[in-house]
Amino acid sequence: MLLKIYLNHNKLIKLYFIFFVLLSFSILSDEITDSYSFPGGKLIRTNGIWEEIKANSTIILNESGRDRDWILLFDSNKKILYNLPSKGGQAYWTNEFGKNKWKPWLLVKREINSKDESLLTLCINSEESKLVRLITQYRISLNLTPIQLSSSLTTLAKTHLKDLEENPPTIECSPHSWSKKGNWTPCCYTDNLVSRECMYYKAKEIVDYKENSFEIFYFEHEDNVSLADKSLKSWKLNNEINYMITNQFSWKNLSWKSMGIAISKRYSILWLGTEKDTKDIPGLCN
Image (cartoon, rainbow, N blue to C red; front, side, top):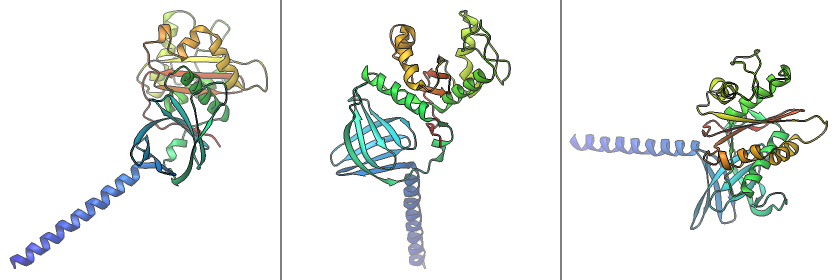
């Protein structure tokens, strides 16, 4: 009788052990949202962290942007930007800006399709996607880390873009202003401290982004131009805005962890923040 109980007890322990292993494997599998193979290794994204796994080494890569066709990965040790095709194929790398010298990196094959549909919940258009890449390349050319595209700040940028187009500010108020026709505190942005605070606090007020954030804008008069190209070119020529994007002089003690982008026919808007956004990175609109 005692032997029978002992055997049954052992079977129960084994069943629990098998269940635990299967459950652990299931949880681990759910964590992996992207996986690619290449000759001699793998690229795996687990809980938002990318690893390049080879026979004798593992390298951590940071994701700094994506759309339906590409994923930008950044190696902070070597200051190298990788362009990974999201559907598989030839990947490229660069550490130069403005010369279009992308060099072949890996020929990758997609193995696990991401089931994380929330990556595409908030989308950016092709011109916005281009601006993300231009800003990323510009910062890398100066040995600065990329700024991750933020769902929260992109939502804020698109909200403000809609308000500017539907309710243009009066002549005495700059485009940093917010109208009275929305669920926010209206303000006329001028050069005084009160109006500046209205801009700084907008991310906290609208999208629950905890830290202060800063807005840069560009307005275009001409038709049929690339606002991604023209806005960044204009920002680089403006010393104070350029210092802000590249963390120089009065901005050197701040570390940008998030950026939001919105572009229409006339406006290009960039928000920068020091808080890392835990929400998923927006994807490219259909």
